[in-house]
Image 1 (cartoon, rainbow, N blue to C red):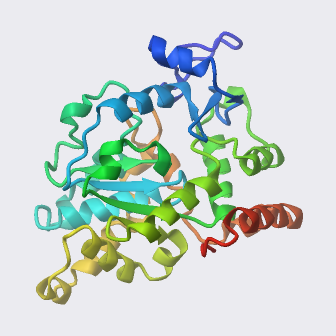
Image 2 (image 1 turned 135 degrees about the vertical axis):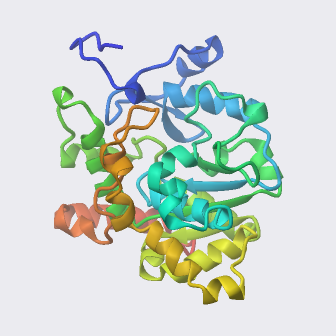
Length: 331
């Protein structure tokens, strides 16, 4: 597909799908915002989505049936999603794939093993199967805000693991990612302009603060259903959080596994250094058209210090304080 303005051939993830009449009618009534990397965004249920994603949101809200054994990996974009997918996939399948040398993660990008609920436009939601390597429990990823999850997800006994990140690092990573995936001929997003959009909530799946707060509140009300994690804490104590995740999703590590070093083995297999140096993650492509390498930039905590001015930092901190005041949530 080519853009009418430039004649550029857009990568698949930037191409718009043919929309249903229902979706077209809905979009015509929604607020719109210029997207960071191409297609415009539309505000639905308080959050911003492209028309392609909005179309699949409507479909999965109507048709997706959650199972009590499902495990949802829910995240804000650019908050460690790739790492979380790898860790939970390795945890759930550790007995099926005990050999790290011949593990599916060695030959597959984590995003190919744990697919997104709302990023599969032609999927049969009645018979949703998230990968060819596991049947149950189903591992399903999503960036959807809590309010937009299908009712069957909210009402079933399935588990949700939510991972978020310091807003300053989240923004910088998001900005870097957007500039990495946008075709060079279309230019780049300036830091100042992009920050302004982020602060107004005008980014895909944004506003960031509302997204995080929605899951935070649900974790307080239903801690048996939703495990709320912070990327920075996972980076500082990965072994503790791996055990927390294992307990929460119902596959705790046995004393024998602990004695054999299974925790260390999983963390090594799923580490940034290991995954980023695999050939599949250096030169591979996903079915969406994304280069797999764009999901492995730095993965560090505090990189925002290298990019944001004091004024930008004050602005983000002020919004964070205002949005989360009284919630008990902080970074």
